[in-house]
Each structure stands twice: as C-alpha cells, then as structure tokens.
Length: 192
Image (cartoon, rainbow, N blue to C red; front, side, top):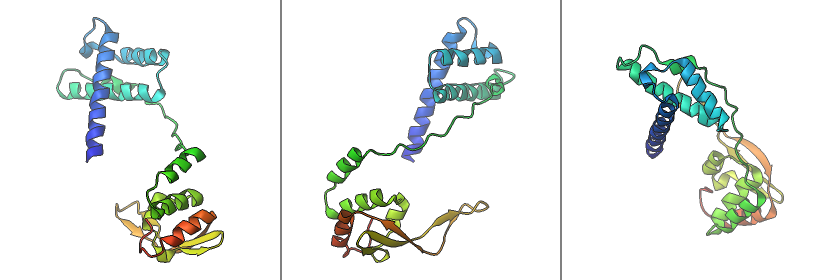
C-alpha cells in the first residue's frame, strides 16, 4: 500500500512537471488549443535537452493523462498525445553487486545465521524466494556441494492463484565458509 502511495505521488509530480514544462513550451497558446504537432515538438525539445528516453516517455504519458481528463471534462475534443506513439524502451538488466559490495554486506551481518543466508545466496545464485522457502532439512551439506529441494511456484495464466509444484532437488557449489556457517545454524528449522 505504501508503494502504491509513493507511486501515486511520483505520478502526480511527473504530471505537474510535464504540464508546467508543456505550458512554458506553448508560450502564449492555451493548453486546450494544443495540437499533436505541439506535443511532438515538445517531446523533440526534451530529446534536444539530452533527457533519458524514460523521462521523455513519462512526460508524454503525463500529458496523455492530462488530455484524457480534459477530454472527459469536455474541455478538448480529443486527447492529442494519444496520436504520438509510445517508444518501445529496452528493458534494463538488474545491476549485479560487485565483490566488494557483497563482502561489505557479509561483514554487516550480525550473526552467523544471517551470514550463512547471505553467503549461500551469493555463492549459489539462489533466488530470494528460494532462500525464504529453504528449510534446514532441505539442505544436505557435503564438502564443496549443497543439495536442497526447492518448491517452484508457477502462475497459471487463466487463474491468478499460484500453485506449488512438487519439490525437486538441485545441487549447487558453495564455498567452505558457507558450509561452516550453515552447519552452525542446523538447529533452527528455517534457514531464511
């Protein structure tokens, strides 16, 4: 819910910035008299200022929201930003942490359990959901390898509910320090 509120505030700020910039761009022309050429020229002016593609897309989307509201209120006949096609933006890959950042994260742990979780996740490439659902009895520690059973959660397209598939085993390589940390915490029932 907090994330939704933050997202709403972010959208309001983007709308306010876009309307202010577009109004200044139009100079003496009222917003209700704007044409698709005006919107296109405004977006091009943002491009000329060297703004990121995502910023230009956000400005276009904010103007579309404004003009949709103006159209619903009978202030304009059509929402002119709808005539400007959205660019397909490339999806960004997640940023991988550097070794130094991971070492600082491990050093910041307060106990051996947390250290084992961080090291196991980093050394094995486990997903956070896999770490969370991992029970101690699922872990089989041997020198140089850790075998565990993980439940896969799959979303079914026709239904929004998730179903759990049977646990299957996967073997991963881990460092010796992970094995030491993990074996110290074998008394608790849940690893994460």
